[in-house]
Image 1 (cartoon, one colour):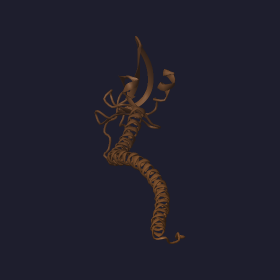
Image 2 (image 1 turned 180 degrees about the horizontal axis):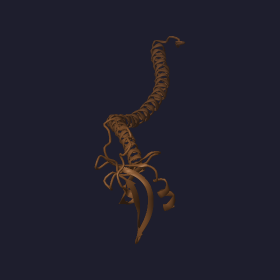
Image 3 (image 1 turned 180 degrees about the vertical axis):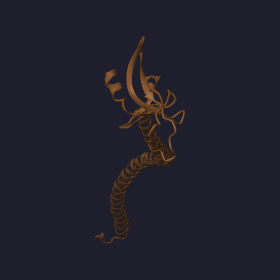
Length: 218
């Protein structure tokens, strides 16, 4: 795998981001392993006398030299250029990964802000509902008091209805007694009238007898 990576570095220009220089042109590459770390040994031809236009000119390459780099020093490898960061610039993939993480973070922040806004709205709505519940609780207590008063009034009405029924019964009894009294009165009046008539008749007859007259038919 190291050889495949190394072969991708041959015949390319090497640019150092930290130095801001074109280091040269890779003509060959070797891999060196030190314990658990491996390195690329690049054989490059340094560039000299580069024109301001950046055009390649004859004799611009000097004698070859070697540079030793870690795979982590490589920022990216293009079709023509190898970009080195010397461990101070993360690889392009890492930059892309960090960019993706930053994008995801920004998205999460926006979602969090939206959720916080929703939570604030829900809290406000909950506060309104709590006030409504408090008002309804007060109204419920008021209705409970009215209900208790109604039940007390109902009990009083039931008692009064019972008393009224007793009064009606008493009135009916009195009416019955009055009828009996009227009947007794009529009977007494009849008896008294008959008695008076008998007494008067007796007196009249006695008077007539005393005078030698006939008895009255009264």
